Structures are given as C-alpha cells and as structure tokens.
Length: 384
Image 1 (cartoon, rainbow, N blue to C red):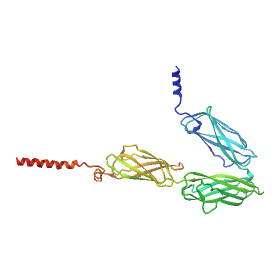
Image 2 (spheres, one colour):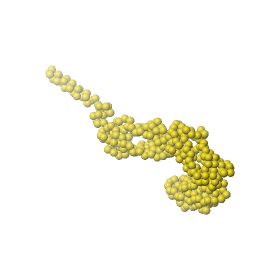
Image 3 (cartoon, rainbow, N blue to C red):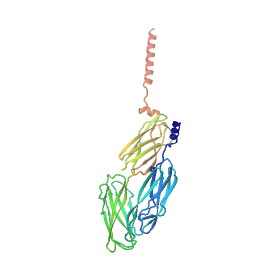
Image 4 (cartoon, rainbow, N blue to C red):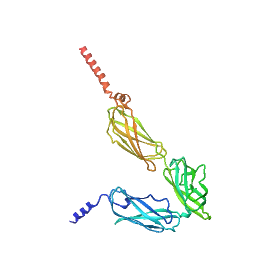
C-alpha cells in the first residue's frame, strides 16, 4: 500500500515547476525625477517567463521615507506561464524630502518562496533642481573607431536662476573605450534662468578595438544658486557600441549534378566589425529535392571569420536556392535575411568531363578485347 501511495505522489509531481526565478520585473513609465510634495504613479511590468503557471503570488512595495504608498500590495491567484501583468502604485513624496536617489523595494512571495528587487527614484528639490532632460547620441549606435556627438540638454526647474553650471562627461575610466575629439569633456554654462533649457554637445570618438556593448558614462554636474550656494550631483548616461554583422554568402564549390544526389557547400563570411551569434540557415523548398535536413545551425561567427555548411539535394538545371538566415549581433539585436543563390548545376556530360563522375575504363577496354578474340579465332579457322 505504501509503495502504491508513493508512486501516486511521484506521478503528481509536475514535469516543470513554477518559481519566482522565472519572474522578470521591470519598472516602466517611471518619471525621470520627482519633486518633494508631489505624487506620481509607478508602474511595474511582471513577466512569467517560465513554462508553468505561478500561483498565489503577492507583490508588496515596501513603504519607507520619504515615500508614502496608497496601494502597497497586490495579490494574484495565478500568473499564467508566458504572460505578463502590470502593477500600478500611487506614491506621494514627503514635502521635506532631500534631493538624491532613494530606494524602493518591491517584494514578491508565494507560500513557499520570497524574493525582492530594489529600484531607485531620483528626488530633485524644486528650489535647486537642475535636471538632464535628454541625452542623444548621434549616431545612436556607435561603431568601433568612429566619431559621434553626445548631446545633453539640461533645464533649470528651480524657481530661481542658477549660475556657473559645469557639466563633465567622465571618460577617464580604463574600461570606457571613448576619447574626446575636437572638444573637452567639461563644459560650462554661465547662467540659466527659471525654466530655461540649453544643449551641450560633446564630440567623442570610440576606440577601434572597442567591445560591442552598452557603456555607462558618469556625468558630474556642479552649479550655484543666486546666494552662491554650491550644489553637486552625479548621474549616469549610456552609450552603445555596436556594429551590424556584415555577412556574405557564397557557394564555395559547385558539385551539383542535374538529377543526381549532390552536395551543396555554402560559405558564410562575417566581414563586419562585430560578431554574429546564434546564426541559423534554412533552405526553403524549391525546384529540387532536399535529402538532408533543410536547416543548419552555425552558432557564432566572429568578426573576420567564416563557416561552411553542407546541404544534400537532387537539383535541376537553373536551380535557385532561397535561404532564410536569422542571427543576433553582440547586443542581441535580431536580424532576419532572405537571400537567393544561383549555383552552377552540371549536366551529366559536363560532370563526366570535369571529373565529378568517374567513367569506368572497362567500357572502353571490353570492345578492344572482343576484337582481339575475334581476330585470334579468325586466324585459327583460316589455318585449318
């Protein structure tokens, strides 16, 4: 009886289990900054990336100074697999809150698990608030070894004028593959009136050996109010080093014979500045019969490298090969390409002439031997 009960329990265990680790949590529609004495709505997107439903989940945004939260808890009976939900929290900022980054902790738990994630909110006191309203990189994705402009817009949100504003783009870290070009990394604005906005342009160049990824650049800001009180703030901007993989597709060697089982070899060359990842090639149906798998997974092709793949098929004359190629770049951007290759398909005669098909010499030797035998028989009969 115990063995039967144990067997039933084992059968009830699901093949895939739900876990809080499968929750992907992101703060969306968050304000760039908030001011003391105001209210705002904070929205979170919760994605269940797992293959199993997650049941009995509670989300709590922990209340802590200087924030007051109206609706600090949400409960869900089920979050289906491969689905997402939105959480909206109404938050009030204390009127006496100081400028700076404050933490908000979102905890989420089931009856058997508990986890949390920390988010930060930038509080800017209205009387001394100088904010960065936008950061634009031109181009948005900077290729290794190329020039770019970083445009930073700042705005005086205070009710008074601000002066001697110094903004520095800190590129001194050895981990940052950027250098100033035709301009310095520190610029000064003599003054900004109430609600006035201005733009600063930093000319930079990326190093030729820069790794393709997102880089965080420290931004240091110093300024004074009308009473010559000094304020200092630090921020971070992001710059993207990226280059699209440039892939060339060629037929390395044509060994295709009309209406014969043949091997097609395709060479893929990455002549771009960045690697191609998760590359997959699919040979679509056409005027031929595919004998091998029509899909070939190559994986990664480094910059200035190549890979080859083989397809086995029975082609016809004037065969055109439609290929669908999918891959990612170093920053996981997706690419899909549809290309057509037109290989040389040899006739049977051409294949024999160029040695693709070996012709048996017995076909030529046999008639000669036959003639010799006939001649020998003829001579003997003549002698008799």
